[in-house]
Length: 420
Image (tube, rainbow, N blue to C red; front, top):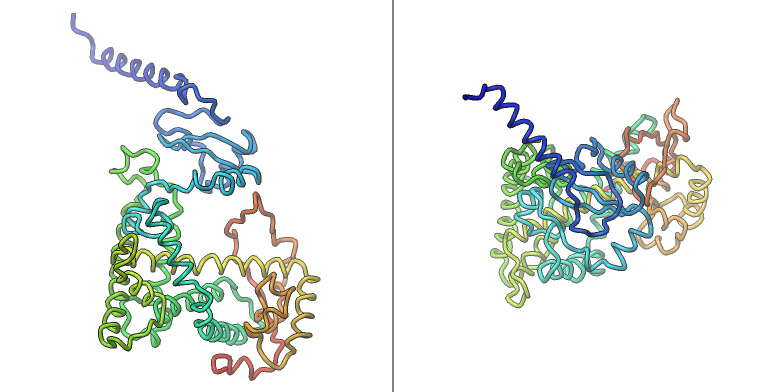
């Protein structure tokens, strides 16, 4: 007797449900005593418990399951340590065991197939990259040689803030411009946010900013294809498409930068002297004695890493520090008193003054404190600036920090800020 179509369909559905139930109920971990955690679903694992803000979702789960928790992101097992003790266990006691990096779409498409510092696997290449950073790029002598760049850009910031004094400003925009200008000049030899300084640049200032912002975002997203590899080809969220677009834009820009620096090396010949970090990287890459050859793609990946790493972190750090000062005026007053005593009000703070400013050193805000009195806009209370941290970590602000500055020093110091 021929079965009705709906009976065939029902049989398939029941068989599928039975299979999923069998898989879901099957003991996991091959008998291992796994850390506690929520029961994973077939295929998606615990991805259904991760919201738009993954760090908050994971924190909420850790409050329920404890400081050491086992999750599954699709087919990928994830162990989360969320206490001081667990952080020491993973990052200090057994740091070598956990130095590996996962293979992700971001590492593949945005860092020249894992040839940067952040996503490369622990091994000879990564150790050599770390050595290059310590001995070549960030040596004391090298950083001291760029002191004039930091001084000029900081004074340009103070000049711009003086022009906006008395008005509400979004501080992060100014701090981001400062960080990007400094790292751009140190790394690339040009200020790519300044159309005149950059000359006939391959990218516009807005595009330059956008590429960095997009790089930060795409390297931090939870891409479904990383957790469920057989869905990778679908690019469900569209992240891989964006990564490929960004990769092409960055490569066009970085090819221009490398070609420009190589042309100067060839033109100057034996009289060539490295002026910025790209020059240094290209010199290192040409060394035949390197343990692992640093390819052109590796040089571009390093440049991209250093541009990104030198901007966002310092901007966020200073912004949060100023928030803390606005919330605690007694600390602000103590720092101001030390600056007035050591530096006075007739000149700017210099890097040479830092050893004499032990209190301000802890905040690293000497010029900004020295140049202005800071206050919150009308209607904003200090209590609204939540500075709570969980596990020593902080997250981006829900709203930008807005402040009002009043100049403390003679006006001519601000007007001629870039000339000193």
